[in-house]
Each structure stands twice: as C-alpha cells, then as structure tokens.
Image (cartoon, rainbow, N blue to C red; front, side, top):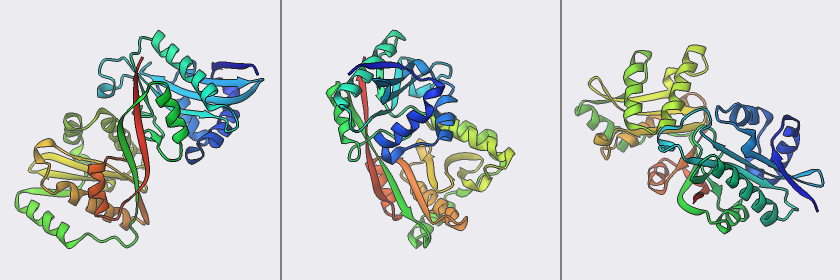
Length: 314
C-alpha cells in the first residue's frame, strides 16, 4: 500500500472533519471550529498540518503548530517550543505505522525550524483538550510514549450540576471575614479596565491575559458582559478574579500574597451562583489539577476526563 504525507490544503477539509470525528469521537469538531481555531489561528502553517493518504484515501493527520507569527510569552520563553494539538488515524488502519510516520515527519519539520521541544496539546491559543485522554485514547497515548514522549503533567476536566446550587453558609462566613479585613468581592466594572489588566499581566499566565483581552473587547460588541467577571479588591488594588463563558467556568486566580485565605473558595461559589442566576443548569471546567479538584469537589464537581500532557526533546 502506497502512503504519502502532504501538507493540508483547502480541498481536504471535508475529509479531515470526517476522519477527525472517526478517530477522535469525543472531540469531533465542526467546520466553524476548524476555521476559527485552526486555519485562522495567527500561527497556522499548513506545512505542519500534515495529511497521510493511502492509495489516495485520507487515513491520518497530525496538527502541529509553533510561534510562526504570534509570540506566546511564558508558554514559549525561548521561542524553541512547538506543539501537536491533534493526531488522528483511521480506526481500521495501523496506528503505529500511519501515526508513527506522521509523528516522524512533523518532528523533522519542527527540527528544521529550530524547535527543540515538542509538547502535546497544550498550545495556548488553540488547544482542544489539555492533553491526551488517558482512557478514551490510550492507544494514541501509547503511540506517543513509544516515540519517546514523556508525561510531565496530568489535567482533569470536571462537571457539576448547579441548578440547585446555593452558596454554603460556611462560605458566606469566609466572605464576611474577608470583608472585615478590607477584602471585597464584586462584579467587574468598565472603570476597572486598566488596573485589571495590570493585575492579570503581573500574576496570571500570558494565555489568560490574552483570553481576558478578547472577552473585554466583546463587552463593546455586546457579546460579553461585566457580570461574567468577578473581582477581588483590597482598597484600590485588584487581587483576584474569576470569570465564566456560558457554562464554562474559569479561569480564576488570586495574587500570590493573598492565597490560602479562602478567597478562591468564595470566588468559586459566587461565580457559580451568578451562573445559576443566568439560567445555566451545569458548569464545567476544562483544566484543573488534583489540588484544585479538591476545591471544586466541595461544590459538586466530579472528574469527567483525565488527560496526560506530554513533551519530547527534539
């Protein structure tokens, strides 16, 4: 059987979407997602979005990306990282053969660009999941491990029903204590903009800053509203925040000097309360670690999926 590997082209989109759904059934995407998250990504390069064909039929793909046009801040501090955000092989094909050839070719192309480390799935502007689902896609995880990738972190996705959610009395007591210390929790207002961005840039990952810039721009267009962001203040200083988009909860964070005071617990509860008030029956978190999961668990969140994040020195 003759197998060829070539860059992505526009006339392959329908085949790619069909194969994506067949090979990654929990993470199938629409044409809108393909365009907005992949093809219109500032760093998209068709030369690292590779397609494998056997006798003309699409049997596999690998989506690789790197900082081609847009730098990625603390996610790529030396400018020598690259990412694989999706890999799929037709279920009836030999995964180790087709997937292995795709991995080898995309790594070769990354090396020619001077990249030294490849990470799987955690590309900040456009990842689909935090990593590889350790249960649903164990066969794909095994492929990467066989090609000398190593797990460096695990992430959890969590879900909760909030239709009957009420802020616990204990959480209200924590909020009252914080209030007595001069710490307030309130909705964002447009007059907070400059101070809020300064807080984010000082304390939060660069990708969170990018997400919040995007959302705050949407306020002008009516696609986002201030009550979707909760702030924590001490006097004029912003020391924490939490947000939601639809039923997606987060991200949220507190400045280093104010952690371990219960602020995150109150932020979480008050944000869930607001989500319920806006008519959401459920809340979900894409990415949490085992430590954060204990906090989420107190409010009814349970683990839905677990992901392995991988890396390899090229």
